[in-house]
Structure formats: C-alpha cells, structure tokens
Length: 323
Image 1 (cartoon, helix red, strand yellow):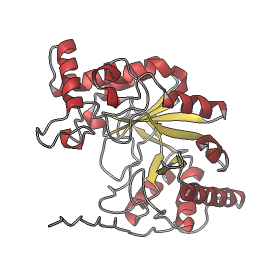
Image 2: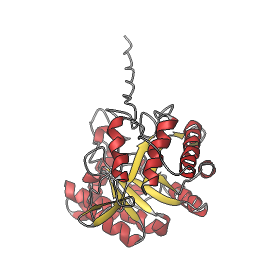
Image 3: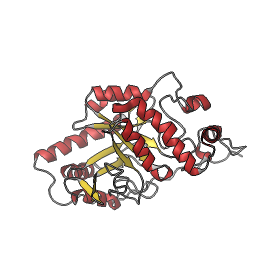
Image 4: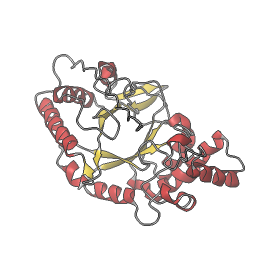
C-alpha cells in the first residue's frame, strides 16, 4: 500500500524508513541476532523482516532507500530508562536496558558510556549494515552526539561504499556541514517542535543556506555536504491530524530548496489502523508536488520567499484524576 501511495506523488526519488521505531533506540522493525535473544519485544524476532520487505519493494519501484536510526541505542543514552517501552515504575528500571548493558559488559568488560556507544555501532548497526548492504542507499542518525560517529561512518561505508550518511549533531535549526568528512548531506533539522512548528519563520534560514550554497553543496574544511532539509509536516514528529503548512508556503520553500540543488524530506505520520501513510498527508504531498512541478515549468521560484508563520504546538490536556 505504501509503495503505491508514494508512486502517486510526482518527483519523489527516495524514501526514509525508520529501522528503529522512531527515536527509540530500544525497538527495531527487523530481527537482530543479539537483541531478539536478550529482549524478545525489542524486535519482531525471526517472524518477519519489515525493513527488508520495504527496502526491496521500494528499490524495485525505482526509489533510493535511506535509513533512520536512533543513535541512543538499546541503552537509551538520550531519553533514559523512564522512556523505555518496558519501564517499571516501581523499580524505576527497564529490563531491556539492563539486558543490553549486561550483554555489553560480558562482551567488552565494561558498560560505561563510551563502551555502550561502541557496542551500538559494532553490534547493532554493523549487523544491519552488513545484512542489507546495497539495500541501504543512505543513513540518517538521530541524536548522533550519543554515538561514536567515526565508528558508525566506518562500519556503514565498509558495508556499502556507495551509501551516504548524515548525523543529527549541531545547533538547530541546521543546514550546515556540521560533520565535515563524515556527512554526505546535512541533517537539516528545524527548530525544536516544542518551540515552534516547522513552518515558522525561524526555519527560513535553512532554505536560504541552500540558496547560498554552491550547486546545493555546503563546504567545510574542503569537504562537501548536500544541503538537505528534514521537515515534519505536522505539529509532532510521526503523528498529527493535519499539516501545519499552507500549501503556498510548502511549495515556495520546497521549490527554492530543490532549484538551488538541495534535497527535501517530509516526515509524515502513519495511519496504523489502515497500515499506510496518513491519506491526508499523502493528499497534501501530492498537491505540493504538483505545485513544485508547476514552479519549475514556469522557470523556477520568483519574487520573495514566503516568510512562514509561527505556530506553537497545542498543549496537551491533562487528565483529571478521579476522586
């Protein structure tokens, strides 16, 4: 279903698939020889390799496949035990984290932070990178300061020398060559959504950075990195009821980025009940894509950049405790 949905959107050249489940480094959509044994719920076990199915189908349809990975790993160095899927409020612990640390200590002799970063790269990422090989055209590592970037780069490039890489590590919003020599394209993360929606004027500088680049590439220490924006469509990453963007602004910002030689990735929610991308999100992308094509046919972006509009994320209603 999802491949068919993407085929209906003009101009798409690649997709990004979460091998880890969102920003959680303790859950994955594919089996793993270690994790599947020490924490069964961390992966689908041997039942099904969803990533392989997606990657095979998309590449067969002519699309490049990028991987999203939560660099915090099974030890959840970024979000901590309280955000683990199996956190126990009574003991204040998460068995999945304890299982992983125990494994790491037995294998490496230590479970300090640097060792946990090394183990994530050598045990988790290496197995996936070697298994999928050329099925992974690129990697996007989130919260990369919680990982060993040089080791991740070495492992992924060895598994597939042609793969491209990006690391979310630097000040936000960001379209900058933050990891010269390690990144092939900018991580392109907007202002944190807890402050403003992605369509906010604060993120206009990201579009302008690509426009000021040399054929879409930003250079640092003589090393190139393709200007790339990774924009959430809704108020939240991976979920939301309706786009925060107006069609006019989305077409304008996206057209300018692409015409300057850069790349643009939309983060869209999944309708889990229908097991497909949100129909509303797909409809929005179709309209924007048609608008981008029209702008290109008319000779490229004209006039001033749409300034954007600042929208704060709606506050969640607190549940009232029953008396």
